[in-house]
Image (cartoon, rainbow, N blue to C red; front, side, top):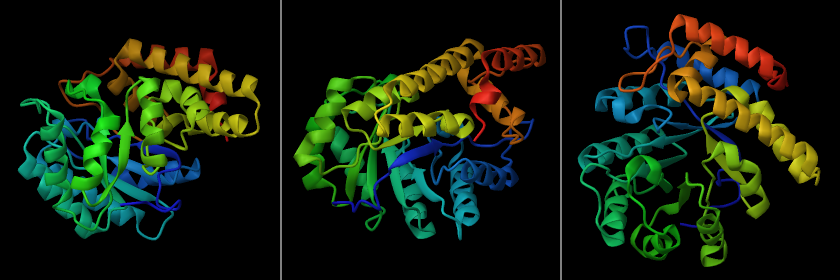
Length: 308
């Protein structure tokens, strides 16, 4: 399908955390705080239940409850909800896709099965088509993240097949630092497809190549950095844009040193949105490490950087 400009994923799309209680059970009461926090920082689209949402660590019923909660919270606000439905079991992915359509999601997305991996591009497109068919009225994005799935095919070739085999195909969530491939995807079929970029620490480079939307985890807690980056790029102020991008790089590097998922969730708690710990197999920083993380964030100026 060809999306209108208003349907495309422009600007920042936060890949949200799934909130847990301290014991690891779902804490859906926090979703309202997450939504309000993001709207307060000018973020009006969320990508739920993806990598940042620890979808591979969630039971099917938990993913259903998460989508239902986000749709209820977003109703009546400016927030658009894109539901990630990908799973190793295509039956689960189809069920989640059908649920998302019934709930009224703006779009769905699905990554490749990653245990039994598609061995050909034809098989990968068949998997995506199977999932999309369960939500025949909802725009479908393929979520390409080869670093996590171990599935890597040229995405410009994916477009060539998907456009004819997936009626609701809208585009690609491109989470890959291969900027040559990104350019080929942006220009496929004369720029017909929506290709939001998924590597926060390379956003400026993607903007220079034509990106108009970005899906990322650090947009949950550092959106003002990227909002300024995008604005600076738009007015041709590359010096400021580069400075904001380097702030992103420093932030990502710091969090990665503590274990990115657990550290990122700890930052959310520091900002008053207690999304709880990460689930195993992801780890979490100790109390002493959280104290050091806060000190390091303060030393780098993070809490000043994220002021609107």
